[in-house]
Image (tube, rainbow, N blue to C red; front, top):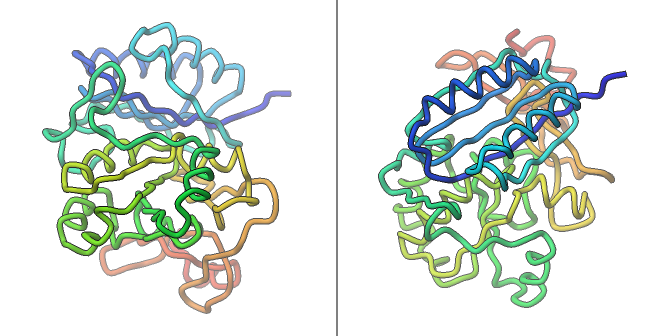
Length: 286
């Protein structure tokens, strides 16, 4: 019996010919029957792919044969190729779109002048040492935080990563510039860029959760500082860690607890909102 997995990874490293990498990735994934989304730029690669676990292992083996990707930290979760509509591999200016490609500098070790990486265990040690001085700063969009976040975290008012620059420069968070700020996101990639942008704007003590929420959940499940579910960008829409997950989300229509985002009709077309099972037949736009 086959077993399927979804693989999440990224690597910041200089790539002289992103187009060649893109063509290689298309061929490799097609040969292994993987589906998902891969972005390539001169700054590196960012991918989420799903498929049979044997093909996933073959994919990781081939990736690690290419020297710039030899030390990629792969993360996996339950899911399959069917959680993605197709395979999409594209060359972009940025592998995570903050709208500041000219500001980002990478070398063979990753992002230059980014935040200090903390393992989940080191994060707990920092909180034990500095207590309430530690500020958790969500590096995702505000919608994602509706169903899960770190306890007491600041959730910036952003709809997309491109909104972060304006948000950081608004003055709202100037009070945090001399505090220990721990950024976090799903798999870690957004924080690689966000911490660099924050440091360039005067935030003095900036950390990032290495491996993101996914790695933290693998270490502590629901027994640590994380509360709720994790939003994911595929058909699953969310995932939970072992143990009893706290329910944070509520249906926008009736207020019933739910962690399920569904498409509904908005002013600009389809709009993702939290909709419970009872309201879905009436409100979900299929």
